[in-house]
Length: 207
Image (tube, rainbow, N blue to C red):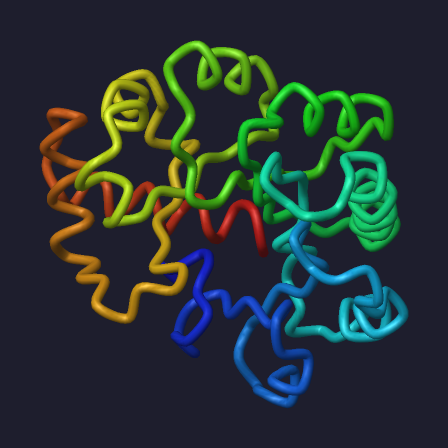
């Protein structure tokens, strides 16, 4: 329950957005349509899989400035998934690249009040403070980004521990003990405190 977004770890929240057939797993999973997915991604499959008891969230979904799809095309797909999550009362796992204002606009327009987790978060302090105004927003941090992204290193001190998740994403070499230690050092607390908060956040959001 430390890994909130993974493409390989059956002990975490497994993202099956790129391989719907892996829904046959008994693991907890999230399912959605990535903003860089091809136009023919099947939303009907997502809706069917989202009904499963071990589907804990919708996503990863969102908006990406570098997608080959237009912003309007991405928004149409994103809005559909926000509405699905709202209907099923499930959290969203958000993929967002340089379009935070647009993502927030959609969430506000759709009056989405369930938990929203920005995975692979690398926003600067200005963006972080903007997101912190929303009590249902959480931030998922990866070892890769904490190693070399100045924006997230500057943002982490202002993110409360009760808003933090950890993830491996696609990095099979993620060492969660090392990741916990890194966050603890940057937050100026003991590593066991970080671990406790991350576990509590997981239970609060998903159960």
